[in-house]
Amino acid sequence: MNRLEGKVIIVTGSTTGIGEAIARRCVAEGARVLIHGLEKEAGERVTASLGDRAAFHMDDLTEAAAAPRIVEAAARAFGRLDGLVNNAAWVVRGQLADVTPEFFDRVMAINVRAPLLLIQSALPHLAATRGVVVNIGSVNAYSGEQNLLPYSISKGALQTMSRNLGDTLHRQHGVRVNQINPGWVLTENERLAKQKEGMPPDWPEHLPKIFAPAGRIFSPEEIAATAALFLSDEFGPVSGSVIDLEQHPFIGRNPPKC
Image 1 (cartoon, rainbow, N blue to C red):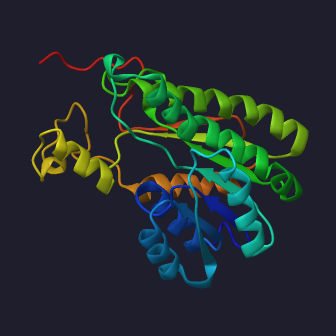
Image 2: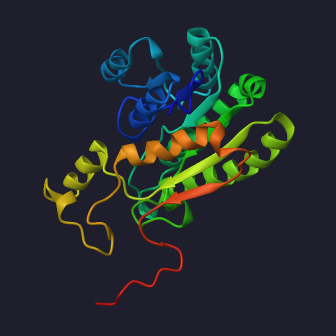
């Protein structure tokens, strides 16, 4: 089934990881996709593998002017815009003692301001097609781990943005806005980050059941499947919703003490 036949989707941060998986799923479902990222070689590789259904635009989301440039690149390449996936994020470790004004501002610029400005820039196009925004958040939005403080704050802000705009933009412009909060996902960057923190190369194969009842964590492709559904017309008028993709109830959970 080609759920996204004829649609044009922007996927930020789509040269690797979850973003790449979402872009590939969108193309497989019939869409044309603007690939975005900072890694020129990776972006060109992904785009080439998707043929004439993809175009690549390299831009730095810390720059406020990046948002209109990205939207214009999609409109120029494909002539319309039906969906925006705000996936790009700075997944950075940081505790209270580590936070400087500059560090915090950079996290918020990439993880919160950029999605806001992209939605603002894309709105005229999305209103014309009654399009969709999907923000990729994190279960860390609800509190987060000790070493993910600034990141968690940014994802909490993104979640509020999704609920607010999911109401106002749907009523005013017919544009749906929803958010996906993934749990622990096995991207290549996450694999390497955990190794840098001292875990062995095969750490994904030895996860405690308390963290991964299924014996494994999510793949990027599993997150992409939900993103494609949100982007499709099958999801009807759902807007302002946040779906948590986790393999256990992390709110109100009562894990065993032994």
